[in-house]
Structures are given as C-alpha cells and as structure tokens.
Image 1 (cartoon, rainbow, N blue to C red):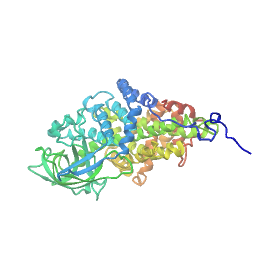
Image 2: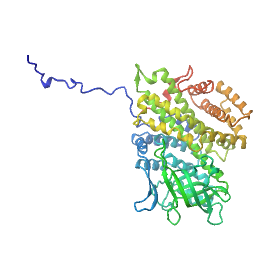
Image 3: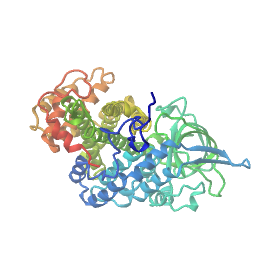
Amino acid sequence: MTTHAPAASAVQPDTWLAQTHEVVNVSRELVDYNMYLQDVALQEAVLREGAGWAQASLTQFGALTGSADYLELGAVANRVPPELDTHDRFGNRVDYVRFHPAYHTLMRTAIEHGLHASPWTQPQTGAHVARAAGFYLQSQVEAGHGCPITMTFAAVPSLMTTPALAQYWVPKITAPHYDPRNVPDAAKAGVTIGMAMTEKQGGSDVRANTTKAYPLGVGGPGEAYELVGHKFFVSAPMCDAFLVLAQAPGGLSCFLLPRWRPDGSKNPMQVQRLKRKMGNVSNASSETELRGALAWMVGEEGRGVRTIIEMVAMTRFDCMIGSSSGQRAAVAQALHHCAIRSAFGKVLNQQPLMQNVLADLVIESEASLALTMRMARAMDQRGTDEQEDLLARLVTAVGKYWICKRTPHHAYESMECIGGSGVMEDSPFPRLFRESPVNAIWEGSGNVQCLDVLRAMQKTPAVVEAYFREVAKARGGNATLDRYVVALQKEFSDLADLEYRARDVVDRMALAIEAALLVQHAPHAVADAFCASRLASVGHHQYGTLPRGVDCASIIARATPQA
C-alpha cells in the first residue's frame, strides 16, 4: 500500500510544534515613567519639608531618571567596572582610573543638576530637602557614582574651617562642571573631592592611624606638609583632591591632598590597587601609598577628627538617602511585577498574603523616606535653630544606623516577590541586593553609629530633650505610639549597661521617630499599620506579618508606579 504525503500547501505552520510557546503572563521593564511623579510619598515629603519651589525641576529630573536610556546607564556602569593604569606605556606613573562612558554621563548629570553642591551655591529654605530628593532619584538609577558626589558635597563644611584653602578650592568644588581628565586642578573649572581616612590597623579607629605629616615650614592651618604612609581604603582615587587624616607633630590632623602639585608634577599619592567589592562596582575604591605627598592642613593641628567630622556628618546623611533610595527602587520593582504577574488565578497584588508582604515593604520604605527628609529639613536649619541643630546631631546617627541596616533584608524580600527571575543577573535585583549592605558598613558601621548616639547624649544631654520634643509632636495621634514613647523614656532613666544595650535603645529610638512622622503626615492606613506592626508586636518578624485590619490595598495602590 502506498501512502502519499499531503500537499505542502495543506500543512499548517505549527503542525510539527515548531512554535513551542507563547510568552504570556510575564512582567516587563519598569522604564519610561516619571520617577518623581510616580512616588506620592516623595512628593508629599518635598512639599512638607519646605522645598515645594523645586516641584518643576524635580518633575523634569524624575522624567530623566525614569527613562529607559538613563536607567540603562546605571546597568552598564556596573557591568563594566573601572580599571587602573598605574603607569603609561612609557613607564611614567599616572595612577589613571578608566571608566565606561556611562559612568561619566551619570557623574556629569549629577553635577550639572547640583547634587554635589546646590545647598552651598543656592542656600534657601528647603535647599537640602530639594537636593536630597534629587539624590534619592539619581541613586535609584545607580548608587556607585554617588560616592564621589557625596564626598564632593560633604567636603565644603570642613574646608570652610580654613579660609586660605576654601578661597581657592570651594569655587571649583561647587562649580557645575564635570571634568574627568587626569590633569592638574588648575586646568579645571570644576573638581571632585575624595576621602582617605582608613588604615589597615585601625579601620574606624582613626586615632590608630600611623601616616605621618611633616611640616615644610612653620606648620599649622593652611600650611604645607608632606605625608608618608599607607591608606587602606581611598574613595575615589580619580578625584582631584582628598581630605586625609595623618599624625602631625601636634597630633592627628586633617589635610587637603591634591593629585597634582602646584608645579604640575604628579603628587606621589600612588594607587596600589583597586578594591574588588561585592557591590558598588561602578565606584573605584583603592589602596594608596603616600610617598611624601604634598598636602595642606585643614583646621587646627591635632583636631583632625573634629575637622573631618563635618564631612563625615554629611556623608552619613547621604547614606540615609542612598539606603532609602535603594528601598524605594526595590519595592517599586516588586510592586510593578506584582501588578502584572498572575498566579493561581489572580494577579499577585490581589492575593492577601502577597498584599501583606507588599504593604509591609511599602511601609518600611515610606518610614525611611520620612525620616530622611525630616533630617534634610534639620540640615537646612542648622546654625539658625537650636532644636534643629540638636536633632541633626543625634538623629542623623540614629537614622544612618537604622535605615541602612534595614535595607539588605528589604532588598531580599522585594527580590523574593519576583521569584526565581529576580535572582538572574539580567534582573535589577542582584545589583540592588549587592549594593544593599554598603551604606550600613561605610562611614561608620552599626556599632559605631550606636556609640555615636551615646556620645552625643553624654556630651550634649539636650539632644535627648530635642528628640523627645520632636516625637511629642505626634502625641495623641496613635495610642500605641504614645505607650511606646512612655516606655522608651523610661529607658533613659536606667543608664546601667547602656553601651551593651545601645542597639536595642537606638532601634527603639528609630522606630519611635519614624512612627511619629508617619502618624503626623502619612495616610492613616500607612501610619496605623506601621505602629501596629513595629511598636505593638513582640519579637522578631519577617516582612509580610502585618496584623489583621491593615488596609493593604490602599497602601499598595499609593506606592505602585505606573510605567
């Protein structure tokens, strides 16, 4: 029997199942949306804390930071890490760090938008608030380049202690010009500033530093020295100058060390290697040798910690912004995905258990943002309002400790909302997760921050009164918070083993002030859920353990970006 194949024209294209599947029920990239206008909590904070005048510029900036092309710059800057050329091909020492053009674009944009200097160049009500909001948006795109932006911004208060140096350097630091060339500062309209404090034997204990500073003349503030020693962690070595701690004859002192000498020769601050970091990949961090490097004393001899702490205070505040930004970036991805993906017959964000998780993540993010922006307002009023001075002194350390330490678990839990795809390297979550511990460790780890809180309380007891005055603004707004504050106040009447208990006390201080801000300013659904889950509960909980009665749907809807 003969069997005839059907005519070719009769065969359907999918007869042999060559088309194996159709891509359905998947998420899509969160791109081409206005990152500012799609963040209700951020908009409210900007208006509340005194920067409503920046609404138009932040709206414009939010459109840029949420655009697909700009977001891709952040991914590329981390995919292609910096490389170090210690010498040129002829054997000359150059200490040149090469970056992908994406990194330079991010740096240029940040500087041209004033994220490195706007409160100094345009001081006004809400200047720090507006700058914090811009930095919050920019950091969601890419965090690593924020390190030199932060240090450049933070160097100004320290340099202002020495007018002879400030007169030349501050105009260049605050100029809206980015010039990445490896050339002397005299040839540049704008410069960036790094920091070199840490040494191998001391870490955070900078008084253990062994780098020596030798005066070239009479010595003292604004005078020249040569520095000899090793710095184990220098961020970021491509900057034009660095604030450095070294042991002068009169004790540990602060110095400004440029990459080039005034005669145009290379200053012998020699980069030994770039650090291989698990996160913050786009940013170059390095080890350096100071082989008689020329530097000028900043501030008084022997008062180096006091001088540089002005810079450190600002960098710690930026750690709060950066970690709050990381929380927002993570939860925005989770909310976006869960608004699209379905499982077991329902869109994920309509399922009760997932609603519990998402709402809990949103609450954490909103609380972090509220505290960060409140501290931005305190920064705006420093020097003119004693209450704000005291609040900034104490609560910046509280917030830096709490927000930064909460971020890694927040990033992980947000990643889990995506499922297995979230772990893949083509997802944004591996970068967010690797970045999440950085701010908690840099600029003073958790224990250092808690000890700083205790130091502030002991040195200036009025900071405690200022803290409770701030929290009292929410009195009567939530009974759970009121009881929590009364219990917290009792902690301060018992000073026994306070250092041992420091983390517990600072945890509770952070929760109380975050709750107070939310009770005053957030929707009832957000504030009540925060108080019920963070203040009334006993023991440790995972995200997604909100108590009954929380309006998860409204919390989720408020925070979900619409791309």
